[in-house]
Image (cartoon, rainbow, N blue to C red):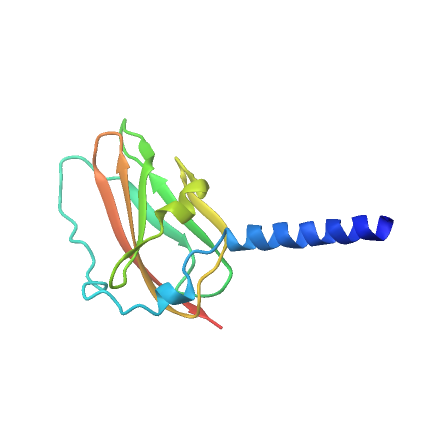
Length: 149
């Protein structure tokens, strides 16, 4: 009887760790195989304004990483405005585009995003991130990183 209970516990633990591992999937192999978006390399033009847009900084990954890696963005508002974390969007620039926002939503806070052990297949990946501040100003960034085997 103890052996059966121990076996069931081990099976439950294995299933839960696999579920947790799958929960950090950032980009699937099928999505990575899609053709690149025709405008994936275009960086949004920055324009001058009287007030400053929020900062949207990709802290991690660096240019080249192994999977899994920590996906980390830093958000910073300016003046008396604050960041609206619910406005964050992450788009994988493929044809068609892939919205990654739902996958990273649990890891978003007002100060940034920290998704530990994010998984992506080997290859070059181009993502677009967007966030608003409380005054409605939007920061947009296009970021490229490469996952190596």
